[in-house]
Image (cartoon, rainbow, N blue to C red; front, top):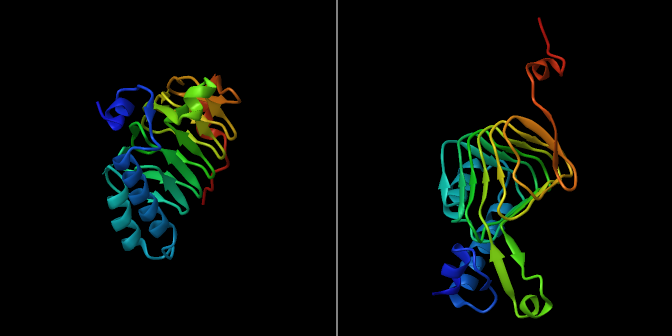
Length: 197
């Protein structure tokens, strides 16, 4: 079994000495560098590069530079996907976003982690577990989502949270570690002022 196959099956693997893994990361790093240095007004070139970086794009999306990911081809985004500045996705395992997912600035979505024992960690062993963010999720600024997490549809993750466990649908969840604080209700539709002519 190759190191990449081990990675995709959730085993510890060596990400530091496998030629194919290193080449894939460097290719993606170059594409992200190119994307991050395009004029913000050059939307066509941005789209072309995002189609080279990401594994699957459904519909129109917006990713605001700078944006970083490890491999890119392991990321799938649904229509109306949006990230603000400085989003980092460590996609050694699959990362799947549904439609209408909004991500605030300075967020980290990481499928990757290192061995807990010092010998394994020192030798470069890593693991990767997939992350799924379903439809209509809003992830606030400075959120970190840890490996193996699923966030269900219609949920809001509050700014500064560290998501270490799965989060159910239709809730507001906040904190470190992130915990559900309440359901989202019909009353939330009237939370903010609306302009009426």
